Image (cartoon, rainbow, N blue to C red; front, side, top):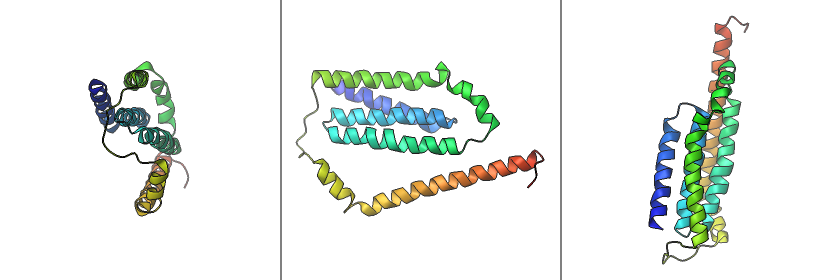
Length: 174
């Protein structure tokens, strides 16, 4: 089981590095999804099944959908249309697909062997997590939500400035 843990950790580190170093936003998002799934596998192996499910639902699901909407909103025009063919190639999807397949194989192994690392910690119920999120950590969650919204608005504003400047450069009217 330790080998599966380290393999999932390595996949998480590699995919996170690729997510940070990719210049194409869609490729970075693909690697970020793989990174979130790898972290979920690590949590699952450690016996934190609820946290693993939250990792997949909240991060790999909701947050990535938000990022995809931002990327779609920042569509800058003709240059993105040219790159659509590159996004659909095997070269673009191959790396994330291989890493995701490794994670899927690890998760299947862990589920079918019914092994997990035993810990002495007490089990935290989902109700306790919800109560602490909306009482003790409510300020942190609200700050994170405001920061995400500010980032989206800022990115949209910067994209609009770029579109206006391109329009002026091409001789358009103001």
